Image (cartoon, rainbow, N blue to C red; front, side, top):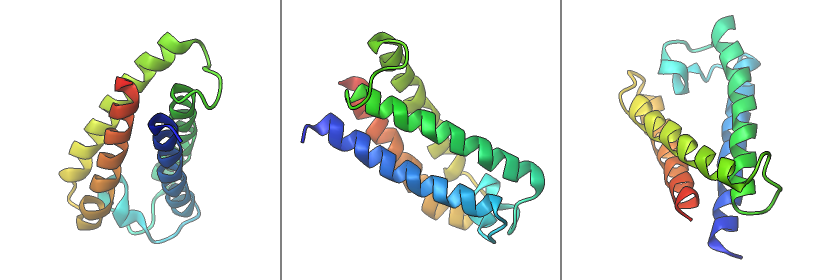
Length: 128
């Protein structure tokens, strides 16, 4: 399997895990210390809405990775996909910083390496 396809599938697996986490947060699971700054054990309604939005964004991120690896057709064209991958890389780099400075120990310990892995995957995909 080519590297870009492996990384796209790996990105989808990580994003699927994050989707499960966000779904659990929406459902009221007491996992709020792992997300959104870790200030709430159970997320309030506004942050649950943010978690729902996150799931939609994860779907777009996954599709972009698959499109970059030529596993699905690009939404617009290959140039748009290439630019999108760089924007997503920057998003995940920002996520590394934000999770790294979180007041929540769980968020720092779990989400920082997760977003670092995604930033690295998207960087490699964007550079190809």
